[in-house]
Image (tube, rainbow, N blue to C red; front, side, top):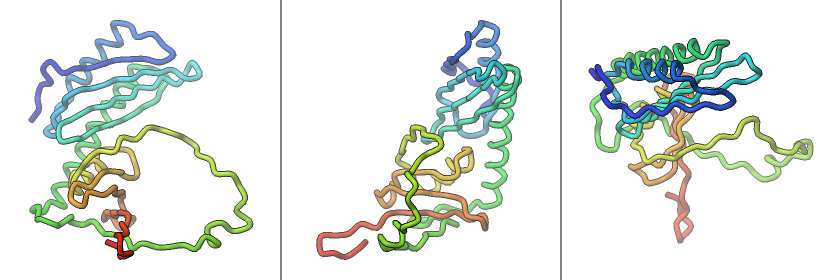
Length: 204
């Protein structure tokens, strides 16, 4: 068990507020107190923010071994409570991941991706996609940066289990293609990869 995070780099920053020494020390002690069996924490970032003078946000990002990144965010009317809730979220998420891992553990086989199901590719005609009634301008609700990392499928499953995201976009180290991994309604995983056309027109 990773009982102590000795000399763990912890960066505490803030937006729209000043970070007092008391808040900084509190955040440091909370992150250092995290006891994770796995993964090993390499670096931690704590980002504090205040919105509308009442919503105090504590976002914690853990950069861990094996390309694992754990991100959580909590909001309350007190910054200390937000930090506590983010730490609790990390602990709950890791317990959930370990429970699921024990239930679904299988020996890793070459060329096997466990319970991942590949989805069939569907091709839609342009007329069906751009119907006459679909005249609204495209828009997005929230834009954020997304780092695409090189992972194997089982590593992507781990990344999905410990994150809040509904999917993981990664560079599949087995097929050397971009891939999207997501959780299906039946509890299994879905894996989407683009088909690549060769010079002779065939698809692989």
